Amino acid sequence: MKGIARALVALGVGVAAVVVPAGAGARAADACPRGWGSMPETAGTPAVGTVRDVRAGRHACFDRVVVDLLGDRPGQVDVRYVATVRRDGSGQRVPLRGGAFLQVVVRSPSYDSDTGRLLYRPADPNELAPVRGSTTLRQLAYAGSFEGQTTLGVGVRARLPFRVLLLTGPPRVVVDVAHRW
Image 1 (cartoon, helix red, strand yellow):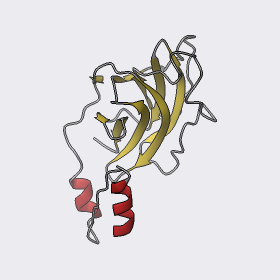
Image 2 (cartoon, one colour; image 1 turned 30 degrees about the horizontal axis):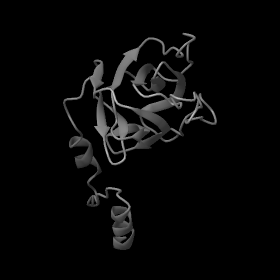
Image 3 (spheres, helix red, strand yellow; image 1 turned 120 degrees about the vertical axis):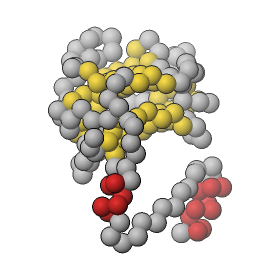
């Protein structure tokens, strides 16, 4: 494990070790972050960069959506619950599973601004990342990239609290959606 951690640090990847004692499951749920809300969040400043990948993960208290970017810094993002997520450019409805829908707008395109060539081309735009086993996430969908921004639809179990993080090294936008209020 130490060898792997050293290799990751040498590659510039942050490593954190968390040890959870046996029987700590109930205590871990009580230690979940508090103070998140369900109102719209806008963070960051406009930056030059492009979307390169979208992935999902599960944590003890929340499910996570990560938008990986090429560039120097994460840029700007707007995340909010909406009645319907719409495709960029056409305005067509993006069908999503779940009881509530988050619209994630990253102010970075998924195409090369000079040539128009797509740099992020998901195999299935309606299923960007596997969410099976997630407590909260039901679906991640690509709603398009138009006029310098990329829109994602996130189907979630219910309208639950979320937070937005802009991280560097490498640049990425993170949206965490809590498992419960």
